Image (tube, rainbow, N blue to C red; front, top):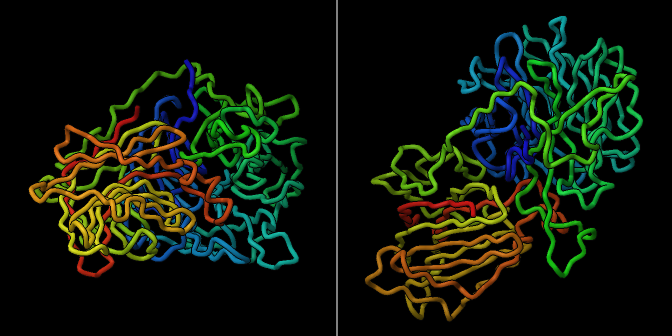
Length: 536
């Protein structure tokens, strides 16, 4: 049996993997999307299912106003003392000399919660993880941020003991235990006690094509740490490898003591007019999760089976019993349930009555701020999980000003998105327009040629067709006869790599969803009859 990578497709970076009895769990970063932290479950390391989001209340996660790609960076999931422990970072500043962030700890007896009131730990740095030593003591590992312009900002990996009885860190125990290699940007620490030694796994090189995972070890938790002679995992020297950006992950063993490493990866594509090496490509699905098999050499160092660049196909555990999951989303969601499907997300804040409600088999979204608004918008969306997919909605909307617009969007962040919408203009009243925000520059493609909506039409149907390199929008007045808007949009605009060329927050991935903008402040409602999402 084979594991086919990536095991979790679409924007799901920074995996923290654990096994509890015969079940594996992976926690992934969610950045500025709510609810916070995605947790997938597997019984065989082959098939995975999204099962819960722990940070689903404002008490656990308050991100209102967070900058693009702020929020939840690299959560750490662990299991000890009969309960789950989740450490997470809420990053408030992304660009510049500072990385204002706060680390929190919450626990639960069940992976489904309820999760305890968060304990504030510190703001020393991001990518924090909790290590449970075999003597019962616990330690927080994290990268330490240094804002001083004459120092490298990634100062090293700091270790601080955590007092369970006092529910706080003991700062007097803090020590930088490892500065990483000359590649720099050491982050994402995970510590394991194996074969009588402490093994420290860390990411380096930045979360782009130079990304890598490295390993160091010591006889003492506080060091000194000896570095493995070469990178444990990286695709940097393998530009044609289908898995790129490999690094930032965590280790797990099976009941039969086989070892695997879950890690971040990206799958770039390039236009036919571009070199496949420079630029190396565009990862519109964001950073995904893959897994590799690990073995140990005679000197006790880990290595990736099949090569450190990472493989698409990996041998599954020898005694794995295949456990397939029934999909937990509908291809066509008619909004028959009171709650949004688990695959839907909102930006920064929870889905409450301020944003909308589900009523009479409709998702009703209130008109709020624009998609450039970091505090107040009405967007319900889900990840692109394939390079080729279709999404479709049916919407009722009666705008009376061009400041009101509702429809279907493909979205990366506040500066990079597009939208087909019902709106209004002085020439024809209710019309269909297609708009795009590219590096903050807004374009209306149809302008005075916006498509007039007949007065008798109550619902308008919108569809988007995503085809790896480009995507288009279509509309229909009856749901049967479709017309394509003659605008082909470059999908690379919704990729980490394109955003990274001009913007510091490039850590998410493309989403598709429903949106209602009414920046006139009158909160005009839009009624969505269904949302259809189909991988081609």
